[in-house]
Every structure is written in structure tokens, then in C-alpha cells.
Image (cartoon, rainbow, N blue to C red; front, side):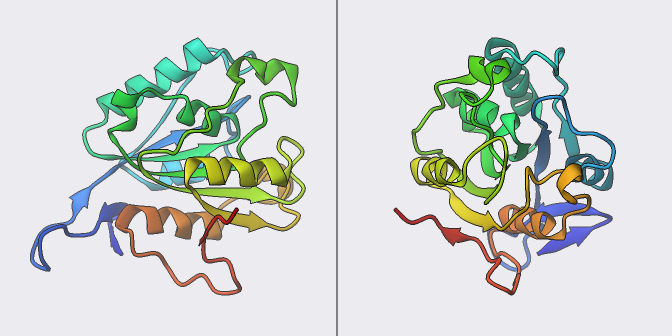
Length: 210
């Protein structure tokens, strides 16, 4: 793992002497955006190479507006992209087209929403169930009001994501007590350099099973 001046750097690709390759972290909030105490906001402030997707309308999300905004952000990034998405941001991420998806090297998909569960999110249905062309870690909670854990597991299987199941973590946001969220930070590091961190207590991401 390489950490320099608060930055995340991917591991060397051609021998121990090679310089680490930088990555662009793109933070993708969900419906109603992520407030100042949300882990997405705290991480954006901490990481100088992070950029945040800004939607024109956070209250009434529309797929044909949200997804192109995300795609432009990805395509304009100066380095290979690692996505950090929450809630409806996860669904926007999997709706991206091939060109933008090809720029992505990894994605942390946290508490994905079920767009069929709330009418205001329904424009994002149906959710794509195709394997993602990059490594992804999906984190879901046993009592998320926006997505049943069974559906989150189905997403993980369909997308080929590693699946981290949290107990009683709500929507993994400020309201459920997740500010800095150290576990998520460690999972992000594991995506950046591909090595992972020893998480302990069974929190290490495991490949989702059928």
C-alpha cells in the first residue's frame, strides 16, 4: 500500500523500482447528495486526487441526466479511475456505457439502492445485471431501508462483485453512525493497490457466493 501526502497510489506495475501509478478517485453520491459529515465528503476532503460528481438535481434524479454527468467526470479524469459510490450512485455507476467503464479500474459500491422501492428513484430501473468489467466491492447492510440484503447479494452475484455484508448498519451513512467509516477506507485502499488490508473479525471482503 502506498500513501503519500494523503494520496492513494496504485502499486508499481513493472518491478520494485517502478514509481507508483496515480489513480483518480471519483466520488459518486446518491439521492439527495452526501452531507458534510458523510464518509464520502470526509474522504473527498482528505484525498487531493479525489473529485466529486455534482448533479444538477439531487432531489428528482433522472437517469439520462445523472449517468452522462458521471460519464463525463470519468472520461475527463487524468488517471485510471477508482469509483466510490453510495446508494443511487451505485446504480448510476452500473448504468455507465462501455467507453466510461473502460476507464475504471475498480469500484467501491456501498449500500446500493433499489430504484423500484421508491417512486422517486424509479427512472433508474431496471438495474443492469451484467458483470462489471472491473474489480468491484459491494458493501450492504442487513437492515438497509433502501435495499433488502437479498437484493444486494443478487446485485453482487450479477456484477461479479466481492460482497461485504454488514450487520445492522442501516444505509451506511451519517444517520446510521458512519462518519469516517474506517472499514470503508480500508476497502478503498484494497481497490487502489489490489493487495488489501488485514481487516480482522471477518470483515475481509469475500467473493459473493450463489
